Structure formats: C-alpha cells, structure tokens
Image (cartoon, rainbow, N blue to C red):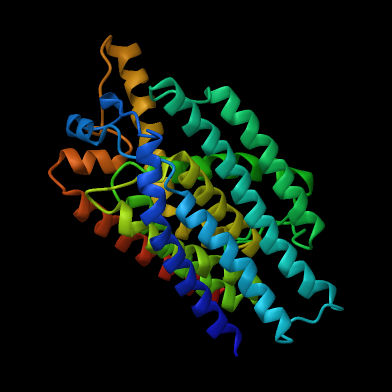
Length: 345
C-alpha cells in the first residue's frame, strides 16, 4: 500500500468520523445546553436568530483528524515505510506530532474560552490578557519543539528573497506571527461554513506543498484535517446546526500556522493564509481609522460596514453561501500561487 493511498484513506476515514460524530455530539450539546451566546454588535442583527446554536462542534474534526493522522502514521510504519534508525525520518514524525500538540494546546485555550462563555451565558470568556498569556506560552513551546526536531533555520524565506540567519530574533519575530495568524483564523469563523471551508482548501494546498518539500508525515495531518473539516461542514453549512466555537477555530488557527512554520517557506504561508490575514487586517484598519477620525473630527468614521470583512460583504447583500464560495475560491487561487512559488523559487 503506497503512502498516498494511506493518505487518501486517512482523509476519508477522518471525513466519516467527523460527519458521523455529529449525530451524537449535536444532540448531546443541545441536551447540556451548550449554546452559543450571540452579541449582535459583533455581527449583523439577523445573526440573533442563531442564539443557542450548539457550540464546541470543533471536537468533530479535532478528534477525527488527530486519531486518523496518528493511525495513518502507524499503518505506514508497520508496513515498513519508516526507517526508525534514520534521525531525519523520525524528526519528520516528531515535527508532525509537534504541530498536532500545538493545535491541541490552542484548542484547549479555545475550549476554556467557550466553556466560560456558556457558563456565564454571555459572549465573554477569557480576558484578552489571559488569552495572550496562554497563547504566548504555547507559541514558545512550539518554536522550541521545531528547533529541537530539526527545523532550526532562522532565515525568513520569501522565495525571491531570503534573509541571512536571524538567530534568536527569528523566534522573537515568529511569536507575534503565530499569535496574529491563529487569531486571524479565529476571526474568520463568523459565517456558517466559512472557516471550515477556507481551512479545507488550505489543507489541500498544504498537502501538495508537503509532497514537494518531502514532509510526507506532515501530509498525514493535512489530509486528515481536510477530511475532518469536510465532515464538520455537514453540520456547519448554512443554516448551521452546530458551530465549531473557539475550541475548533483556535485548533485550526494553530494547525495552519504550525504547518506553515514547519514547511519554512514564509511566502507560501503568507499566500495560503491570505484570506485569514485580510480578515484580521480589516479589523485592525477599521479600529485604527475609527480612533483616528474620532480624535481628529470628534466623530468616529468607518471604512467597512462591519468587520471582520465577511460581515461587510454580508451587509452588502452577499448570502452566507456566496461568502463561503467567494472566500474559499480566493483561498484556492492564492494557494495555487503559493504552490507555483515553491516550484519557481
């Protein structure tokens, strides 16, 4: 059985596990009343009807992707595909497991945030300072793991430009990159099916990139997560029967960021993550412009109708399905450009 057949099986099993688990998880979340509190100031007024939709559905793809990625690796290993005496081959596995562990850490942060929101019956979980502290610790631990398991280059690779080795400054720079990008993925989860669809596309692109860069073990996780996201979308496409919650979106954010850093091509990571980056950047632009105009004119002004930018499109008349398709296709276009950049440079 070839490695890529194992990869395909991993993806299909992950899809099935995630999809079937919703049959049991969604009623369970209803029963324990783990519904999502909705703040209408954080989205269009008509989102109020989504109040009480079960949250923490991210467990569907978290459990499915982690179990199938690890299971797929052990099948591959038992069939003689892994030379356990080769340090670099083992380091590839350890790097995959580092990304899995990193994603689970961020998923745990998201779970705590979700649980507090549900317990308090309002859309306030961890404070920004608490979130930042937890994320900082997780980011430092992940960067240490990458260094430990052979991903120790401190150059920034933008394809056409590569910096000299930056030493410790590389890691200091990557910490805010990790925190920004993981939270950018979290912000993308504001329309039914959006974050899951965009991440599904990202994982397909990353799978191709793993093949090009010979990170075969990591591709087990990208394929598992692609299948898991697709299975989750059965329950999350509009009208959503379940939300992924911060549990799911923080897990996905760490997965996207972690995979990008392991592949160590920063132009690729930028292109694959561009939809998420634009989502978060729209919030930064809106808040900055509002504060600037309020100080200068005494009245805050806005560039977008509402941010993150998917809400701007929603308030401009786009249906949730149209937003999902548009953003996913945009992600695919820039993902293909990322693949091309690998082949060219």
